[in-house]
Image (cartoon, rainbow, N blue to C red; front, side, top):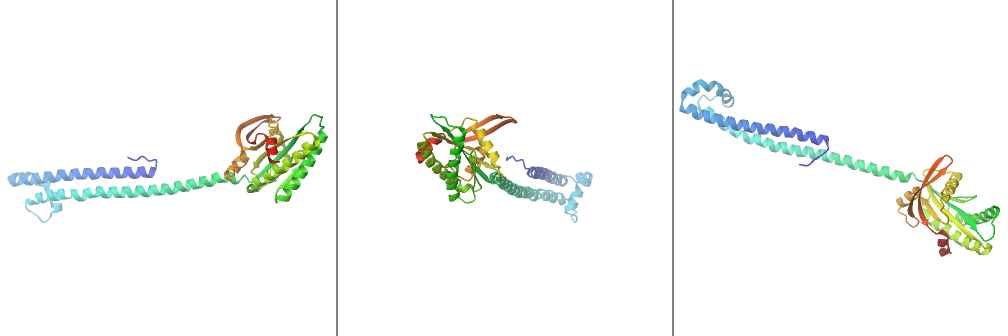
Length: 309
């Protein structure tokens, strides 16, 4: 027996179970009465006194079938009729099975349609969680190491020069992006399809400039790149703050991406800069604790840039 949680199917099965019980009972009653009437006919044929004392019990049903017959053969005919009635009553059993199967199939089809609609809606809802992620940022920060002392003012000047050069390259090659130069370089865009090209262009420009700066000033440039995504336009100062907080987790010289960005990136079936999940990190802040689920794209960003240049 196939089990189901469909209440309507259970009700149908219970109803037709009762119908079959009624049919079975009717068949047994008909068979019993048929046998009794045939025995009774045999008895009255053997002794007329049996008829005199018992006719009032057997004649009503016999008269129902054969109202115009006054012979004792009416009881034999009644027994035969009752026996023959078993055939159409048994056929009701067959009809009940067919009707039950038809009703259950209909209910199953209805449930299948409802389930398909539910799955379609779930699929639409699951896609919506990706569709609402509609913009991203690439945040580039730079630090420097040298045998000589490097003042903060010098770092600021170097950053300004480097960021402006990279900004010119990006603006010249991409429409619809925003590039903000401050303590960090922040690129924001809504065009996820162009992300790989944009990221590659940024890496090439950074690699070229890094090579020039390091050779010219005898220092080592330590870059850090973080890609993030958002469900709405995020303010530049917040993006910079997120970047600073992630850098405090001691991720120097790495290219990283957040779980939010990775979620959208993989949904779009991109994989060039997908990164490898490295877990969730907690950072204690003044107003509580922040957590970041991160992916590492390049573990040694300087080495990657060196291979590009």
